[in-house]
Image 1: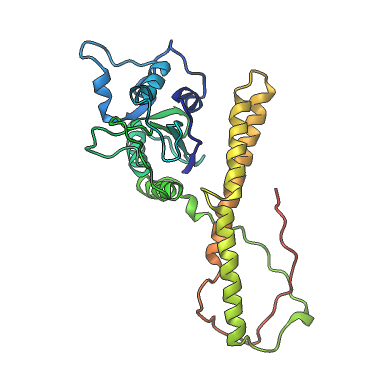
Image 2: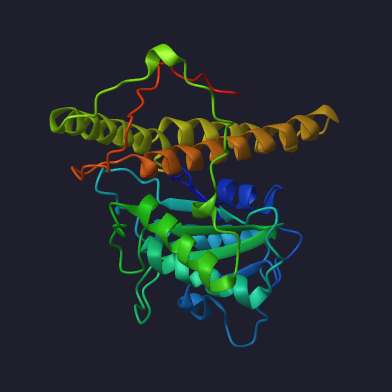
Length: 305
């Protein structure tokens, strides 16, 4: 399950259109099969004599309501971009989930994101939309019903990623944290590179220090919140979404190709993390064998894609 946090926006219509995969309309209604979860205070907006049927435009208006009711509420950075949007996507090999399962996942992620606290009657307006195969979108207005701004966890991306790993385990979904690295065939070591001396304590400390620095670098490259690979993946996914909406035949095809590229980028992130985790980062001295072999230095590997 892959979480992605979008940039905040000043209105809900654009985020809801992306979640639905189509423009927001005031003609069709979103059924309970599409909006699988929402904030508990929605009943306040529904008189007893009216049926709870909402069009996409209605849902966007409900999400925007706190901005009209509290025109002076601003974020800690003094802006009014209050609409928060995140989505999660299942692995292509995962099974189809039921509406109840999507609803439970939505509530768990909403609590993790800080937009829903059980028992809080003055919290955020939020909904969870399951309109595209294998994808769940969370949309929330960070201006609370009491006029204050909801401050989300500072490590939100990491918290969302951790909760997704727990959801995978609880629901029997494909775990993206257990992707094995491809094995490369062993290369013969030239005779002139074989060392006859065992590594000393000083060389071991240098080795561990170097691998620890490299592990940190790889983790930074693969970081879901600030890493450059995640940034590129987000741009590719955004381009794929825009191409998929073009009316010409080549648009959806190119969008699908970009979706495949985004998946490969995510696989690169996982491989970087796995490689970093395999590097020694403590001063524990490895067991010595005889004779020791010093492998030749090679040029840095270039990306295959």
